[in-house]
Image 1 (cartoon, rainbow, N blue to C red):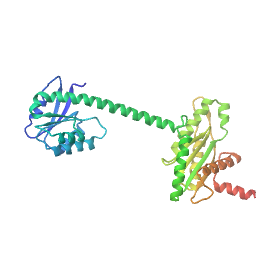
Image 2 (tube, rainbow, N blue to C red):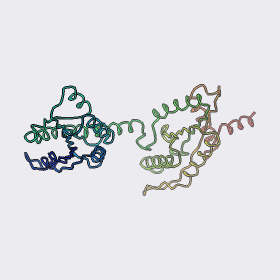
Image 3 (spheres, rainbow, N blue to C red):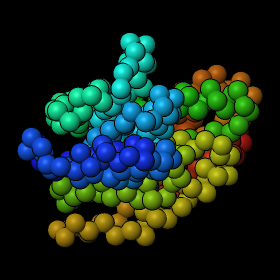
Image 4 (cartoon, rainbow, N blue to C red):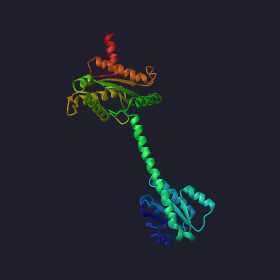
Amino acid sequence: MDKTVRILVMEGSSKQLSRLLSQDKHGLQLTVTATDDLEEAGRLARDSLPQILVIDASISFAGIKKLCRQIALTRGERAYLGVIIVRDEITQRETLAAIEEGVDDFCLSSRVKTEIHIRIQSVLRRKEIADSLQLTNFKLKLANEKLSEVSITDDLTKLHNMRYFNRRLLQEFSRSKRYNETLSVIMFDLDHFKLVNDSCDHLMGSYVLAEVGKLILASTRISDVAARYGGDEFVLMLPETPQAGAKALSERILRVLAEHEFDNSMFKVQIMASFGTATYIPPDPNFPTEVELIRQADQNLYVAKRRGGGCVVTPQDSSQDSLEAS
């Protein structure tokens, strides 16, 4: 335990308590700051991070409650502050009320000279346990956040996985139906990606997929959801985005991929991709569920591949193909 203890004293004009605490007792080195102003005490408790707050008998019980509540609001999840009240006497009702406000211990004024340092040591031990628990909880929180991130992220591309994507797509589709907002989906895969693995190696293939993930994240909005659909295929969901917006983003990603040199110091390759888009414009009976969005985007991706790749096919484009074929 650190032998230097920061003490904040809230007392009246006598200053007897702060003078007493400034003395070295029971192996404790106390750094004492004293104030008789309630607002200043709250500020010091927030900014100076004392370890112990001692409130003497001259402060009214209403003032003690106000100070404790102010400290609880301003300190938040920061280090635990032990609170000791020095009183001439205290009723059972006041004791229970003080404990509810966060008071840790009490010391009668008649025994302050012999007991206050012992009370401080007791509260310090309690504080040490509380700080340890707080640190453990913080580490657990970080670990849980990491686990949560891993559970929704594709390890290679750092995009979302399909489990997360499907959940978000259902949510956004329901929201689009309710508020009559457009919702677009883009599906694309890399053209002739198998040649990268065959002519280079699988390490180069993994490198390309990881780079594509970075390029997608750099090209999309925070509100967009990008995921690895599987293998070298990717899917993007674009809330509140019309067909023209989905086409524009697809063309931008296509251009970014075409201009990017994929170089892992062993091999260099150029990559093109084929894109298919779909857009839900409510109300539209052709989209009874969000699955139809994926299906239509996938069909348009197939049309893009059939055209030779390196292009974007929208629902309007595929409709035009059907008209020309008829």
